[in-house]
Length: 111
Image (cartoon, rainbow, N blue to C red; front, side, top):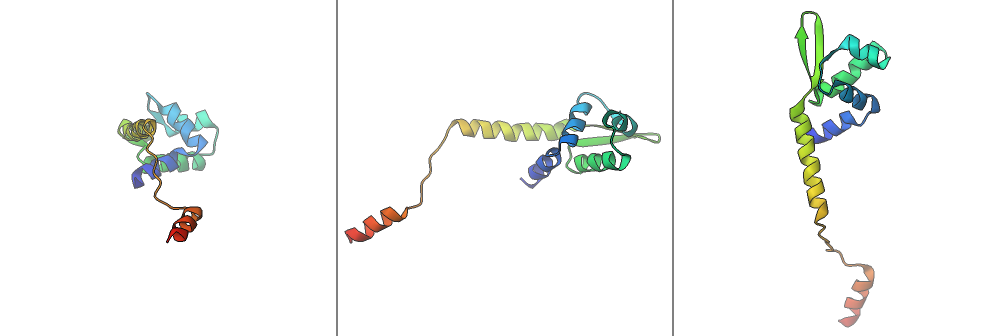
């Protein structure tokens, strides 16, 4: 669960979600990401670092260039979790283990 929380935290930022969407099906170097988002280099680097630390992105080096791409394995984990949540949400089990004060008063009055 800790890994999932880190992934969702990384994806909880609009810019990082936009970077993820931009990288679907392709690799991009930092300079292309910079051009696409019109943010400062330190800001883009920060977002890429957060996404990479969460495992959402992977990088590969080609000479002096670093290319970023989506890590499909992590997205499959997220998909699996969400599918499980959806599946379990379809079958609602009602739990009620607590007793309210009114019931306590009635039970105590019967003694």
